[in-house]
Amino acid sequence: MLDTVPPHLLTPLSADSVRWHLPADEYGNPDAIEVTCAVTAASLQAAWTTLKARPAENRHADPALHRLLLNIHILGLDATPDGCLLSLYVSSRGIHDLLHAHTGARFAEALSAESRIQVAIADCDSRLRWTRNIYCHRAEPKLPVVEPDWAAIHAWQDAVIDGRVVQDHAQAASERLLLALERRAGIGHSRATWAQHPEGMFTVWFSPGDARRLVAMGIPAAPQLAERGPDVGFTLTNEDCRAFTAAINTAAG
Image (tube, rainbow, N blue to C red; front, side, top):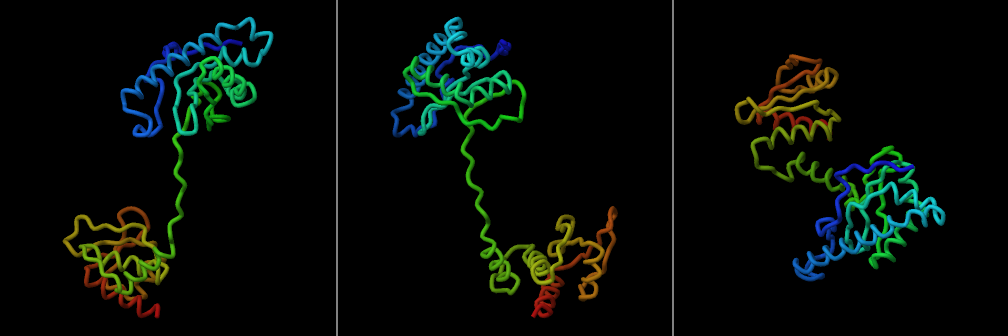
């Protein structure tokens, strides 16, 4: 069955339809790249028009390919070091399944032979996510997720807490206290605020249970209730932070 392609997609390919991902310094000057893109687009457009003009032949010789040709539209081409990848509009999930199966491979082979440009179908993560109007195109390579070096991070935090690394900024004492609470006492704060305080002061908020532990540990500030929620806050000066950090380090041994 023929699905209708949105009119705004029925535009001939142009030089702008070819996205160049090859190093410009290795493949000529920008003007030469522009000419190459224009020639590539023209060749691909002519080959696509020729393939689409063979409906009767394809209907009987390869009905699956015939159905695929009727329900996709070429939007462009990505020229990459790994080859040329087609950017396509696909009308439905069923057509998309054909595209990423043997039928799509035959389509790419036929288009490559007709245009004399080796093209391939781009890998696509749209399958099973959408049912209609799929844009199947080259996805930008995803950088591998680098796991943080937690051993190095914890070593740096311990050095700050022990005073072997001395930070020189307005929140240094309070940040050192927060590290000591988390790393040495196992107490994490819900939030901390430095704004609307005189320089050298901040307020830190804890759960009621952790607040009771801090009072028992001798935190040098009076507890205060939050306007909303159960959290308990303490407002400390830099001197309070340094003294309480030293007490936590001593208690931790």
